[in-house]
Image: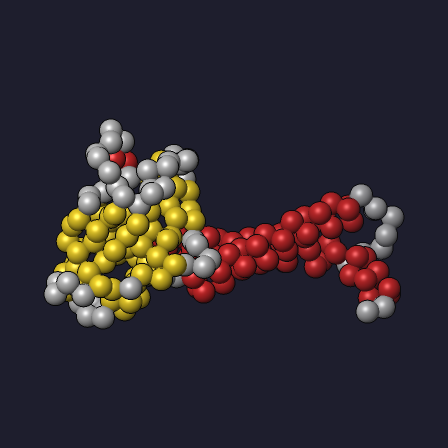
Length: 184
């Protein structure tokens, strides 16, 4: 693009920047709650820590197993997970290559495995290597959810782009305001 194009954009930024900033704010206002709703919609259920327990899946399909606990916890360091059907058949858990991680002020959640549930029903979740109960076990959970990877990435990319447009609009508007001698 020619230098005169960019000079024209800069010269008319008072007319271009504010609508771009408003559009970016509107996009952020839609994308951020949309991402939160996507994550919430995908959650199926949580279970407490136990060597072995029954879990019930209402429908077949892919589910993700995530661990949740206080930030920096090492409670799950030596734990491996196994899921078996009611008849004792193993449901293979596949490692997640790009683990989804989320954290709040005091808790963190990390996706570890994905299981392909062949049919609705009751399954047995075994946590091997859990060891004896510890005082903080009530703060730790295992969560099952529907994988949201691709949609989550799309929301995050949209948020980053909208934030970038907003920041650029404000910065260029401030730079343009600092050069009052240019004709609008």
